[in-house]
Image 1 (cartoon, rainbow, N blue to C red):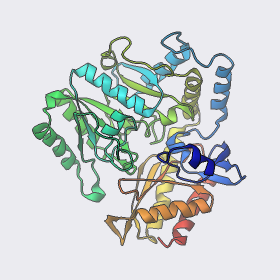
Image 2 (image 1 turned 30 degrees about the vertical axis):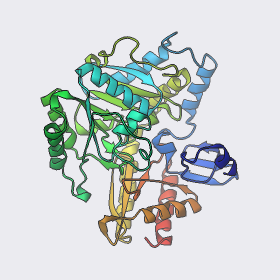
Image 3 (image 1 turned 135 degrees about the vertical axis):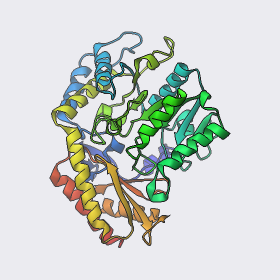
Length: 419
């Protein structure tokens, strides 16, 4: 840690003061030999677990062939195959096209570029609490100031934020829709809005699922005004929410979808998937990146899709989520600080409050839980607009025994901190 402090800027955070030596499925061993149960999954990245044998084998096989050509210089079939598979799996019957980039933020920025090219419009509406990356445009789209925007402005213009539905805090679907209408009335006419960008389940905003009917209402509103609907599935995709795409739960077809995190099984790859006519709006050369669609990462992503299908990880995700939320709900009877248990598929959260009042967020309780769980060998992370939400991000391949061991640690930790 002393070397880290001397070599890295303080702006690079670290949730736990430990260093990994090796990992397997849902467990990590640090450089001192201590075992950790991983309920973070690299921030919802290793959905198929650390070092899944099939993913590792695919990466090794590709390493023996080539590691980089730049797809725009010398193409390779695996890139095309991954796009074909994403196109076939994406929600809706409209023909799709895809391309690959490197990170979630890069996918989001390219999605907005395409939306502007396809519509000839500039405005973008996003949601308070949403997170869309740390690039300049990604920060502008993100609806959370601390810690992401502090000291970094000014940001690109023509981005407007509206409230995300949150029944616990009194924000209804009607209020969210009405807020969009107010943007049209007071800030920018609907005919100049290119896209509405939304996470089906907010990540940094508190693992908050959109109500089932809300995305359908957004789809109707977008269609009425010629606006494109972009689903940011960087965190919700690749089985995390119980389906390959979380938007499948909502019965809608987005115009554009962004993917990253779980797609590569730990390798760096992201994707933009969308309706073919929309995706073709950019001119040749307008899309791409030197490292985009790295061959080793693409091989890993293809293996990830195989594993998700063969091991029925979407079904497993739903079961894991039901088990965790049932266990958390039973804890609520004893711990009044647990204001709400929520989630979709394995994407599960607990929001902590003070004195049983959800309007008194208790970040200190959430932090104390994280620290106490770490002392007992469990890695956890928090989120939420007030830092008071436990987000559970288990690998979907973890065993029932490890899942229960981790849940036991959470319960014992809550007892220890008297929450």
